[in-house]
Image (cartoon, rainbow, N blue to C red):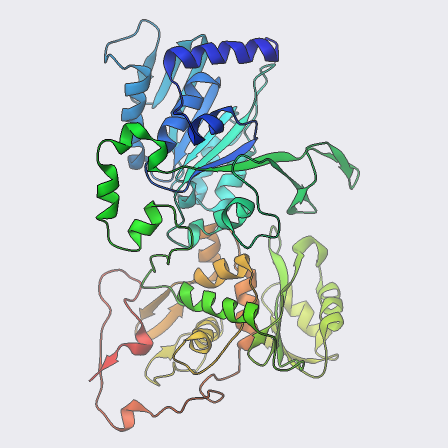
Length: 515
């Protein structure tokens, strides 16, 4: 079927089966973007857009949610759209066991509902082509899962377009933080080239990194033909969905406590709900990044370099350069560009100025880096898995290993009540990395979530966060603070508050001593 005939057929189907609401929903329905974001606010018609596109414009569709039980409302809504009279149709049918619709409006279509709760679950969709891929509340998914599944957004049917649609409200935790950078031109007011809703931008993966390009024309790169993909975003809110607005849903949203009300009304900069087991509160990181934007380093002298060496795959080699309490813009290279010790040392030497401490993560390839660097600079081998005798600032909490020491001391550097003014680069990747680690208490010792566990949970390696933690490692924030501190144990008797509930500790263990 030719493209023009296909469009005419699908338009006719939309008139008889489902029609988008005027406004953002119609504009999104008609958008030519290969990848589209939609929503930002509760009640904007996200569910209907996904179902309407699947039922009227595509042949083989897959709509995903992170956890399957959260699809129940969408499946009920699909019955209202595809079977409004609640009577058996001669051709249309829904398989309750497989969760698959088979529709026969103008052409034969299938719509499958699925879930990818764990990273390993993405494999069950490997090799299964879908010309429509819809992610409902995509901020619940790690970016790695989304990118993996997008590889199967394809078709063999002539004239059938392929499309990915992501619906979402603002991210409520670090898992969904990636969406802010993915749609930065539409969501970030400080973006150097902001985009309006519906405007197409083009992106391509070059040398392992996604980059914005000028247009959608194919071009050659590294002896390969690259075809850019178009991307756009549409803001939608309750006022754009009259059918729901008249039910009084606005009053329900207004009655919610903050920051949940701001989340559901689409305020992407609202303070996120903090996980009580998060090592470094996100607000502390943002404060340090704000200071970086508003000031300049007090000194040009390098204090230390933190070197996190790529271990392969999609990992990066990242170098964090510290000048007192200031971290310069991070140096990042794909792992394939730093395959061995000498290549990383060349990078270090190019950055080196003066005689700073160079803290190198020696796990894996890092040991070779240290071996080649120790004759050229004040290199120090750091193994996050080694034990330590370090304590937290209260002198009561034992830190289990070097990783716990590095991250907990960085937390103390960033504590707004600590008397420091640490400045961190305005880097979304760094923000996500430092927000990611969780802590727990085991047998009286404080542990920080391992790099491997973070990768398994989020789908990416916190290389930027580790580099900054290494840059501060070995520098005691108490010894260099601008406020005096007394040892509370010397004047008062303290009782330890034991964590309860989850295996992760509750609250702040450094403040878990009370009179």
